[in-house]
Image: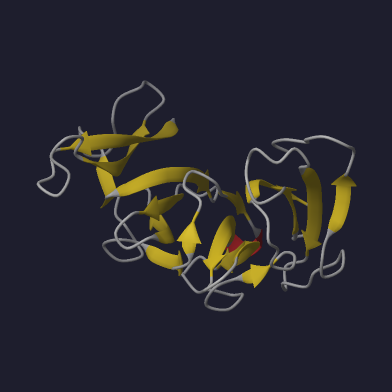
Length: 219
């Protein structure tokens, strides 16, 4: 079988021209029949999909952004389609998220890792940082309320994170670091290795993967 997730747009009096999106998920059996609600199970309203992951035992994790208020959130569904972490999932961050950017990865002992870019807005400057969080199977944030920073906050765009296992219970996360605007031409690729306890193994700033002249995109 398979899990399928999509966005469904519905009429909304607060957005009469376009409506608002909601994230919906469905489980399909090996023969393609829907195993949950025929129209899918709603994750939450006024939200956008970021990524999904399974834990290998039939449970599904959905990472998503909400618009009002702006959050990065995650929800766990069991194999019957029941949400396990409240009606609207667990909020991982209330910083201003870059929509559609972030990912989740299966971790050890039934946990999952999540990463996303946080845009931190101050009075005179804007900065960004890559956040990583480990969530236990029972919904505990294992790396603090807001996760840990994979590198220092920087006056730059931080986009297109990717994660993979390091085959030792931890992870390797990569991201694209550039100038203040997408029009800036100098984008570099940075990577960080983090063990299962949350220790940064490649220093506080991570390791540069490619700093060649010009733009390096989407690691």
